[in-house]
Image 1: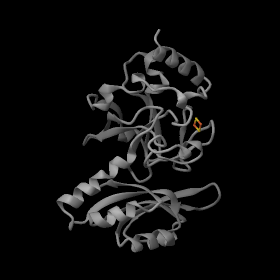
Image 2 (image 1 turned 135 degrees about the vertical axis):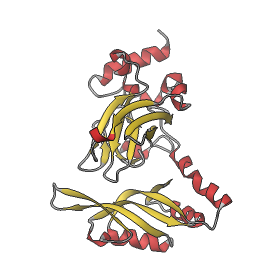
Image 3 (image 1 turned 180 degrees about the horizontal axis):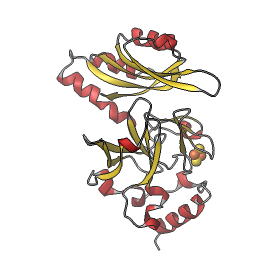
Image 4 (image 1 turned 30 degrees about the vertical axis):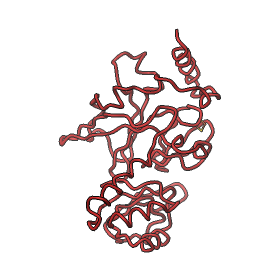
Length: 274
Ligand code: FES
């Protein structure tokens, strides 16, 4: 067995208790962390149909799936698909980029939480926003993400992989589309999804958008009815936004130069094309 094989055997043994070797980030990461066929988008694997996957639910699945239970149980093949309250679908590697424990999605919080050392990840982006993983330098603070496709009949497929499992992802490159729009159509407003690092009170959120002179198309937030009961909300424009406890994301419209300036605000993780 080669070195990579021995590390994988160790990883699987330790992950039986949901804990991974503490020296993981210091190991050189070889080809076994990277599946070329997945990164190249050569796989189109059926995951589930939306009729069986309600909003704010989660599903763990192997990718690429082989049909062999032993191979498919490999932690480095484990991904989590979440159907966010906004309706968006996201799929990330389940291996925490801190020390390789397997984290989980917490529907009540709409975030990923790692049980080992408390790293928290934004569910829109897979970027760690608190805990030790958040202290790691870019791009080692973000979960590798699968590209998701949905057929007209609601069947969900996983295709290519962005990033390296257990290591990270260059998520800032995913905002490069704004610069491209700036060079091709600088005067045409573009619609973007704003992923906030932390939810903002509605007044602060609106003030921020006005400061950067961008238009609010749709907002996503929640209302805390009590300490344990949270209602997920969304609405067009600014309608009812002040009734929310907080806003966690929004669709906005602005010319590329204004989006570029907004992207530099530290409270924003990234802007995704809509
Ligand atoms: S392994 Fe340390 S926070 Fe996840």
